[in-house]
Image (tube, rainbow, N blue to C red; front, top):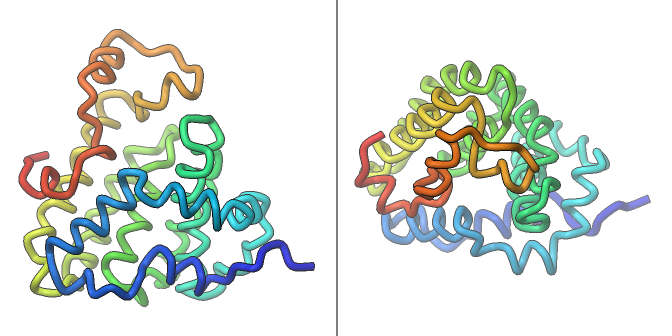
Length: 218
C-alpha cells in the first residue's frame, strides 16, 4: 500500500531545482537563504505534509538504498519537519534518525556521489542532532567539508570559507552549551543565565544569511 505519491525524484526536484543557481554565486546564495530562512515552508506544508509524516513513521526507509534516495530521505527527515512543525517539539523529533542516516551515508560513500550543495545537507543534519556526543560528531566533519569544498565549481569558491566558518561557529555554540539554546523554549527546557543571554542576543548560526556567513569570522 502506497504511503505517499511522492518519490525520491520529486523531493529532489523540489529541493534542488534545475535553475542554474550553481553557476552564479548570488543565485546560489539565494538558493541557500530560501531554504534556511523558511522560504520553503508554504510549499512543504501544502505539498509534502504526507511525505514528511511517512518519512517520520519509517515508511520510506528503503529510499536509503541509493545515494540519491538517501539524500531525499534526509531532506524529508531533517528539513521538512522544521517547516511542517515549526515552533513545536516535532520539528526536532527526527534529528537522531536523520543524523544516523547522514553518518551512514558518509561511511558507505553515498555522499561522494552527490553534488557539493547536496552533500552539505549531510553536515547540516549532523549539526542539528543534539546529544552527549554532539560536539565529538561535529569535530569529525572537517575532512567531509574539505571534500565538499573541493567539488565546488570555481564560481562558488568565495562561499568555501563561509561553509567552513559556519561549521566552526556551530561547534563554538556546542562547546559553550552542549546543545542549541534557541530550542529551549520550544522544548520546555530551562535555560542557564548564559543561555538566556545568548538567546536574547539572537545571533544564531542557523538564521544568518549567506552573505553574512561568507563575510564573518567563526
